[in-house]
Amino acid sequence: MFTYSKLTRILQEVLAEKQWPAEFILHEVLIEEAIKKAHEIEKTNSADVIVASGANATAIEEQGLSIPVVRIKVTGFDLVNALWLAKRMNRQAVVMSYQEPIPQLEQFRDLFRVDLMQEAYDGVHDAQEKLLRILGSGKSVIIGASLVNELTERMGGHSIFIYSRSSIRLALETAVELADQRRSEIEKRQKIQAMMRAVHEGILYVDTNGLLMEINPVAEKLLGVSAQDVIGKSIDKVAPEIKLDDVFKRGKPLLNVAQKTKQGMLLVNRIPVVHQGELIGAVATIQDAQAVQKAEKAIRHRVYSKGLLAKATFEHIIGKNSTFMKLIDKAQHYAQTDATILIRGETGTGKELFAQSIHNASNRNRHPFVAVNCAALPESILESELFGYEEGAFTGARKGGKQGLFELAHRGTIFLDEIGEMSLPLQSRLLRVLQEKEVMRLGSDMVIPIDVRIIAATNRDLKSMVKDGLFRQDLYYRLNVLSIELPPLRERLDDLPDLFRFFLKNYKLDKQLIEKVLSIMLPVLCHHNWPGNIRELENIAERVSVLLKAHVTMDEVLAEVKKELFGSHIEILDSTDLTKEVENWERQRILQVLREVRGSKTKAAALLGISRTTLWRKIKDYGIDRYDDEEKSNNLFQK
Image 1 (spheres, rainbow, N blue to C red):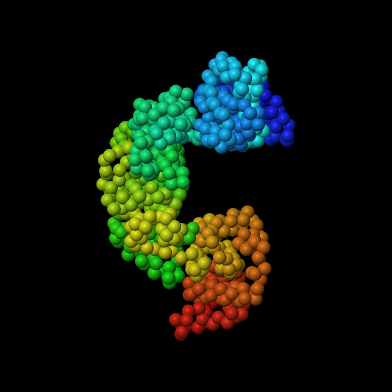
Image 2 (cartoon, rainbow, N blue to C red; image 1 turned 45 degrees about the vertical axis):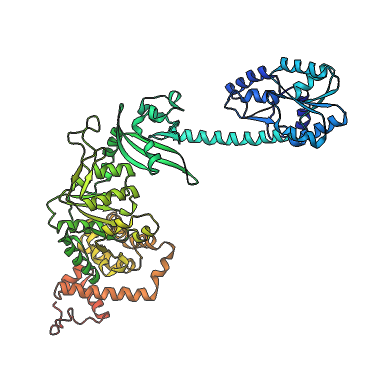
């Protein structure tokens, strides 16, 4: 706080009134000394706010310092009180102020019917000269701040101090609030700067005048500039190639634009900053395109499912469920067309298996099958993978540039898994591919015609996403030309035995053990809801196989499976209804095996993993007298 003489005493009294939530340091200085001290405080950052009055406040404000200045203001009450005191003294009231007279003072002249005069001074010497002249008459009382009061009293004149305690108290309270706000803003700014330093992208922020307000170290390095030299300068002079003025013209983001600079090729995102509907600035993020390419190479294995080859065919799809068989038949018909297909289904229902089978059944089967998971990569990397780069974009880039996945899939099929996770900007580019049958590499103005069949898949409700504005309606209709809805495993439990048997065979269990596992575990498996569908079933099969190969007993394996599938609700598996289901399933299984071996109980017992005696007993218990209802004449079993 900058103070002087009489103001100091009143300030100390006001500060003593209560416990203030801030530390106030008083400096008794005048004008030139106040200016010098203010610069020192700014340099050392030793105060959040400067409080001053009169000449000191005006002089410091004129310096344009970064530290805010709170002025102790003369209120209407202060003027009324001072003029009332002057009238009681029956003297001419002379109000002395620094540099400028007080405009609102004239309205009080007629109100108080007081002899009123105003004087402005430009420093200590000027104030002394004017006071000598005014006080010479001996009929005036001087109204002013600390300097004027002290000089008047030294000259033997009468003075009235202009500031009231309430005005001083208000200034102190304002200073405390401002200091709190400033500290909060500084903390927020420090957090933002820490984040800007931590990210691996270059970040620039400009205001609506195009002046650069923020730049992080990565951007400094990529652009070859220093923050100290460029902050506050026009972005057009600092980095004209960033073209942030395009954002102000369009008011919309411009994403993933390859831009040549003196330092090399950059990948640039330009984003408007809007607050309460008003454009207040723009942000640019920049990346070294060569570094992006290296990162893309490092994670490319996450993009390609199994290279450019589709291994599965419809013969690999296991299922005898009538509804499922109709679905396979539909997919086989779809394979004969080039129309876009949208495959829907929960996680683990075999969406890619169907996509590969459709490709291999189509006339594109001699050409590439490219599978990409749209949820596996950040947007910028996914875009570069799908569309590629132009030739010469990077140091060391191969001739012809880098092909994108659409180009790699030319004349073949591209499978876009988890299409519902694709961002809206990328959806727009995909829509163009579907409409125009052409792609444009990043950083290129040339379009490349392509002949690609698109199969998309999702486990999300795209219709709801369209309503919520998360998925483009026009893209949805372009993708949903042909539709396949894969049922969850819980809706085709009659296929579960064949699926489970297939997985157990894959894990190299012998045939007899497989049949034993099936007879014991299938009734349990059929009571599970299978949220993970076929993938979850395969995991269970792998666990069973590993445990059995480790010589864990069948009872222990069964207990492990029950615990995994049902947790604390295992007791539901011991009900009377389940026992009946187990018996019914076992009866049907025995009948099925007997049909396969044409009634040979020796072969049937071997396949079922039980003795002939046990088989005979179960045949009797279940009342089985023939193995094939269609062979009415054959009701005797072979021995």
